[in-house]
Length: 450
Image (tube, rainbow, N blue to C red; front, top):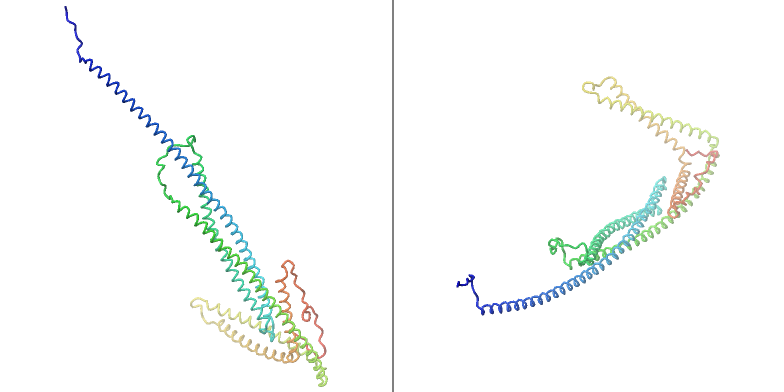
């Protein structure tokens, strides 16, 4: 009988098999236990991470909301500050314009005062005095100059303060724009969720960007801008009050000086009218006395001849003056010829007959001019001797009349200070004793005024 073949390989015993089965069962139990433990830990981790994520998201949502609220409060504060500074800028600009108008108005007062001084500079002879009216006019010019300097200084200060306000407003505006952009960004972040379409992973999102500031620095910057703007607004308010006060003070000072000046002018006019009336009375007495003396000495019949002599003398003087003017023109021609000939070049610059002739002509003309001037002076002295006695009073009267006309013109010009420009109409001279009056024909024995 043939033996059975046995498959080569290791043969385990039954105990080995039982042991293996028990090991497998134990390993399975251990793996199940480990798996269960892992599942429990995973569930705990999931719960913990979910809770942590939810609380972190909640906390950050709260922080974003608080940040938005904080930024929004500062934005509202800056809104109010911007509105206040805009109002202050407008108020200061209006006050500055008022000061500029007041300064411009002082030009009229200054022009009127200078016009009055210029008019009164036209006074003649003894009437050119430094009277109280002129002193008040000079004082008025000084008051106006002082007021203009003060107002100009205030206008300059207002301009500088406006620049400072604009600078402060610019800082506020930049801070306000930054807060608006930050609010928009934070509100966008607050609205993001896992369902938002525009979320994604970013490269190094936890980096600290350049220029990042701390919360305290951010707070201090906004507080500084606000405090700086408020300080400038306070300074602007004080300046506005000072400008309004300066305008009122300068107007009051100028008005007081205007009243004093016009009072002095009216008083001077009254004094001048009394002096004129006195001279008028003296003129009548002098003319009357002259007629009496003329008739008593037999000079009444010579009045016509005297007047004819005066007329002839005046004609001769006029001719002497014409000849003198012609000689002066001839002398100018001779001088010009001589001077022009000095520019002849090189050897051409010779003393020829023309040069001698022109030199002789100059000497002759100079001699003629000296003779004519001497004769003209003698003739004028003779004519003045004829006029002197009778004209002395009449000349003084003419000076007084002229001064009165000038002072009345001053008073008429000063009406522009109290009458609106569109309603101002210059008055006709009420003093018509020198103007707007036809000259009366000379009486017998009375000399005519030239």
